[in-house]
Image (spheres, rainbow, N blue to C red):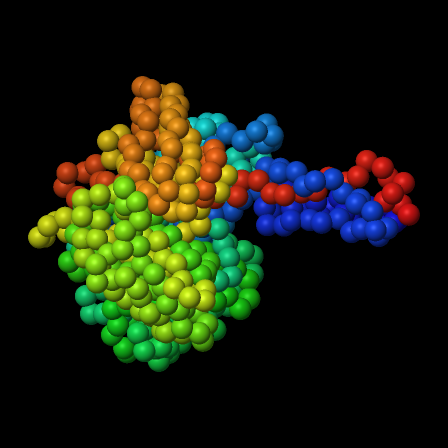
Length: 521
């Protein structure tokens, strides 16, 4: 093997550490084992996309950035948000035009300044995130209905496990309540079971392009009888550094209450999320479901849920038959009258489970009754009574893996739900320092097989501001988690739920064999 080949291997290994996407196996030209066991190295750069939060003038949006402390991470780094507009901004949050300034100390934006021009001549307030150090959250706020989508970048010490939460409170109107979403990594395919084109729903799919070239996207809609007839759903162009909210009801004339949205990117990549606004049940974000799989877990259904509606979709031509179980606080149980769910290929199936949790912590576990057929799924959860009812969505998700975090937790407003469907497991839960002061606190929990446990996260000592929660898998079976956040504004009743999949803060990179004679044969 010549020097050029050796350089190529080193370059690919470095790329894997930067992107967090690649797993590298060094070539074996001699039949001998020429590489050591793969090492887990912290990623060095991470990108996230936050959708435009609201068009309501009453909207108040908080952005919270958090990076857990990661062994072996770089000593220094940066993390920031910039508006997803055709006019670029620099890492400090200042515009490159002649607009105003932002307050870097508070993270708040002056209504008369600190605004960046958007396509179409609109202006939008821009938050500033100034992280102090990994392990401590950083916050920024905006208000009103002109806040754009944002592109986030974290490098060096801030990249491994970086999470970014967008939380919006809307006092009145369609979609009122608390809307929350974890800003997502750009990708090329997304599934959203649980969307709607019904008359009482206003659902938008937000597409945000973080790159320097245009992205081309197809949107497919599937109802209970299969694909919906759509117009202008194919070949949608999303310009570079731009965001496009697309009203689902403009893509089809069919009014369906159980719709699965498939976003497929032909060229480039985008961030995607569905904003579901209801005339009577408030609104929230429907985050992308986990990858299609034969068995799924939907964690963290609130114990006081008055209505739970499950929507599942099988992307292939084969039908899926699913066993429906609830991982309760005491073990796996089967909801009476809803033992199984039949999902026809390329058709959305739905079932109303009512108050399935009956006052106990619960998570849905879907498993095949026979041959496994990949499916995606999500639930809509309703809490409250009368005019104070609010809704939120929980997609099926991956387990917490090695570690997962969620930001923007507030004193006496956050509940963490942990479930281990297949066996006993142990996890460590750490509450970070507060964004404005305080010290970390940790606690270890043991989960019994097939159970869900709702816990109040350990309170950070001397908490000021918001804090982050990190869940680390200690031992045993896979663990799934979700966080429920309640509104702290008495005039804005509401809640939102976010899942905690693995943060992918490290990447597998094999080490080259120290014996260069072997590599050079």
